[in-house]
Image (cartoon, helix red, strand yellow):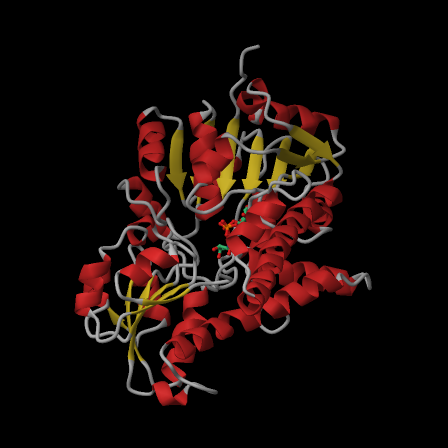
Length: 443
Ligand code: UGA
């Protein structure tokens, strides 16, 4: 069957909007990405990406050149005649109470309502709490009772750093709507995936909204579970990598998201777990397990700071590490992104600074963001510069560039050869053979 091409508007040209917009354009659709930020739109016109995501610049350039992808600040002009309007604006945690801040979503909804000229489908792609679609629909109906507008939930499951592949080869696409016309439109929007037999799950709108939070909370739980097992491994003399493999080979458990580390961070898990707890609270249906996950993960990030202090030989509160120097390799919450939001490195650097330790750092892409959050660190151009005179080197984020470091070169630059490998990248024997003392996670 031929793909019938759609006119799609993507409101919000941040991470989700830009990746989704570029991928929809690559499917052949006609896509307009809208953003209020004139600087961002000007940069996109000039071919500069506002975020770091592997492959995105080429994908954008190819689709702009093909005339399928355009950028504008003019929301009103773009939505006229669009068959599907995606809302992909931010839903940050609201200061103070942890609820998702929906002011951008509702702001966009009001603007869309004012600009609509005919029937359309409005799709929430932003991560929004259960019931948000109902409110979006209410706003539209109130403003434009004469129009046939359906509101659909279509959460995204993109991982930063692998977003294009995740979009084009998803494990599933979830579409929440009871409206037959909207279902047909969404089928056309995702038709290229359909043809590849990627599973598309149609469900109710509230269910779809909840699937997003349940998925992220489950993944955060899996990580937190293996992190606590890692701690137990350390005291009983077991190896968490083998435990992960040993349990993960059971298909009912699965191998992914069982890498022990310094705790999860990023723009999604911390915010979405909190927002899910708020929803659960609002409906008086507590989710105790997620509550525990959030607390354990928060505590873990600080605990990693103490782990580094102990590797330096400090006792108790770590204050006898005063005056030492530590090199942090990797600051972003995970590799292949420049995103520093809720990165474990922040709590680790803070714990070290509190103990009077000087922190030097290197990150391949995150330095610009990191500098705004942690102005007091010494930033270095590469790992070997970062370890100059250091008493310990800590692998905080598993960038590929840190997987095969020249250990002899590292050692000769350091004051004392101590490695703390918070991502279990290295083999103990190899690091010890190079003359280091080695501390890993759960091994
Ligand atoms: C996550 C989900 O994986 C996506 O499916 C979802 O769409 C996205 O949130 C979102 O809601 O927008 P992302 O935050 O980009 O994606 O990153 P992940 O790769 O999931 O990693 C999250 C954190 O967990 C990182 O700090 C990572 O280091 C940590 N992690 C992950 C572990 O510590 N161990 C693991 O085994 C896996």
